Amino acid sequence: MKPIIPENERSTEPLDTEMVIYHPDMKRANEWVLTEYEAPVRDFCIFVPCAKKKPYHESPSHKIFDRLIFGILEPEMVHIVVFGTCGITPRELDTQYPFMDYQFMMGKCNVSKIKRDFIRMESERLACYLEKTKRNYKHRIAYCIGDFRTAMEKAVEMTSVPVTIVPKIETIERNIQPGKGFIYGSLNQKSYLQDLAEAISKPLGRSVIEIKEKEEIINDNDWYVL
Image (tube, rainbow, N blue to C red; front, side, top):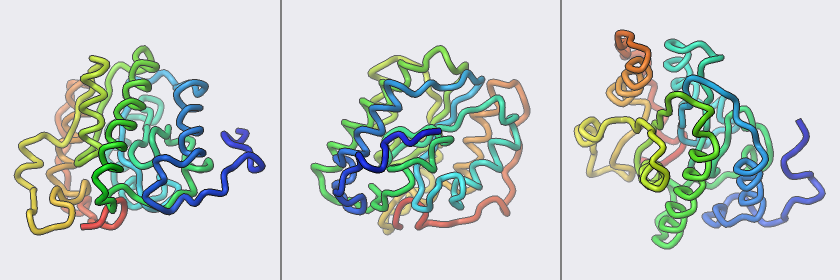
């Protein structure tokens, strides 16, 4: 596949600061996804958060997600889409610039304006993607917490395209850790993963697999800082 942004057309602005959401190449790559990219037709679309380690599919968190997802679904049944600091990134594009090259993670950002702008920009992008792909998927699941979840919730409100968002609110509330930098904890927690397994299994009419303790491999620096 040819590069989304040819090397000779790339900006010299850094991709490792909190200004990454305004970066011209990040904006251009997302515009390409939302206008030119053709999503596959699948039974499921599962949205998962971006990761510190690139490419995403090699990150510790995504490997955990994949073990669960592909333990229930055949690969041809599901399309995985990454969202968050990167905007919207169908995961098969995760080795492309700039999705492979940025370093800053929104979980580290404490600037109120940037956080507000991120939620606004990301919810608009998600809404556009949901509208664009509403006939591509039978079921949509988003696995997210924090600002990423807020953006997804707003996108669903904007479009009325149904998305099952997990973990459940009651599960999140049980796991809040007030003394931590990121109070919701890791998405690798057993109870959160159990909600994801249930969301995938329910449309299939299958019994929910029980997440084993060994699946709970905590890597809390993967996409945010506790």
